[in-house]
Image: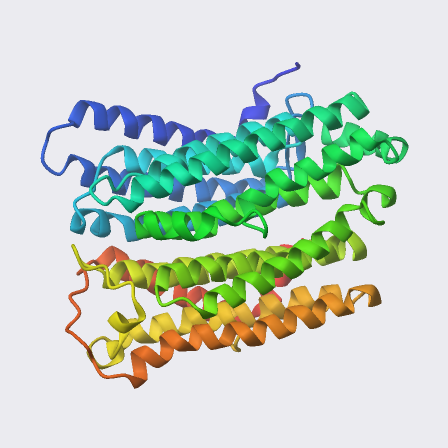
Amino acid sequence: MSFDATQLLHQLPLLTVTLFAVVLLLLDAFARGRDGAGAALMPLALLGCLVALALVVWSAVSLPPRSLYDGMLVVDRGTRFFEAVFLAAAILSLLLSQSWLREHECEFGEFYALVLFCVAGMMILASAADLVTVFLGLETMSLGVYVLVGSRLRVARSPEAAFKYYLVGAFSAGVLLYGIALVYGATGTTSLAGIAAKASGAASDPIFIIGLLFLLCGLGYKIAAVPFHMWTPDAYEGAPTPVTAFMAAGVKAAAFAALLRVLTTAFNVETAKIGTGGWVTILQVLAVLTMTLGNIAALRQENVKRLLAYSAIAHAGYILVGVVAVGVVGKEAEPAVLYYLLAYTFSTVGAFGVVAWLGSRNDERLMLDDWAGLATRHPAAALAMTLFLLSLGGIPPTAGFFAKFYVLRAATMDPQLIPLVVIAVLNSVVAIFYYLKVVMAMYFRELAREPRPQRSAATAVALVIAALLILQMGLMPGMYLSAIGQ
């Protein structure tokens, strides 16, 4: 494998995140037992993410796209976009985490290092140009998330959720590896570009087709597509709420980054895309199932975290509509998918952020009845939650509205996708009902009992940032779509 030092220049964001993660682990090891040691690490983790984000912006402007390590990684504008999304999700989640962890007595120094290691895995996924690199990035991210989900040891449902998530994750990793092995057996390479060069000839090979199916199943677990969604409600409910926000935004974006890279690079020939065994047909079915089941299940939820978990499943279905459009229409549909992921990141982190802010020790207030009358005591928080829910529901003038609009418009470019668009629109209408259940509880029901929310400036800053970005993306969508299109 050829290597020169200039390749490290293209990986400065990844190296920065990894370096800060290692430093955080060492500082925690030497400072363990001292009062406030864990809390002191959060600003350093935040600094690491901010420095890495600045390097991402600089790299996108100053450095040309480049393939690294004999084609194992590729760094281009798409990579930089996803790196920025991961870092934004991490920054907001870190701001939400410190006061929540302290309030619920589960603060530990490794938390912040694990978040950065997860981001490092996400960055590897976004730049992966080989199926082996995809697997390494996926597992680097997943191992950290498993620990974060189970980090609230005093509450039984947290380790239980982590155990379920780990078992499903281990099974999905095995499925993914088996798919990689089959594709390698059919093509003789794991390089995405190499697979693309041989895909036309191998598309009629049953081993190749089965390998593609296994790859879709393995990645389907990570994006929480039906029928691979079973872990999502339990993991989201059991995890510490800031971790849930990080999972719902960052992990999902990373999985879609891998899915887009693999499908549009390695399996972009017509024979692998179109037809009864093509991934476009398979993803259409998964999109319909994911949207429909996610929304119907969310209608029945009285627990706000589980409601948002099923909402996240439904949103995976909407994003899959965009991925299908990319497969049928071409590269011009990609900006719509990326815009959707950006809008979804801020909306879902904001919604879980309000859930985290409202809950206090031994009283997380997760049921809808616990949100009754919130607007009378905390109108700013109720307004912020309403904004996040309206964005998730696709109501103008929020970012969520234009996210759905652009994805559905991209799908309508090909007449054969019109039925899929109609199903997505009907599902969006259904989704409004369960989002409005929370809004109705906050504004139109009597205050049941006095809330005792956290007093945290960092949490307030995170919620304000998320709300302002949702509004800005909704009021100036063309600016963001133009920038993403580059």
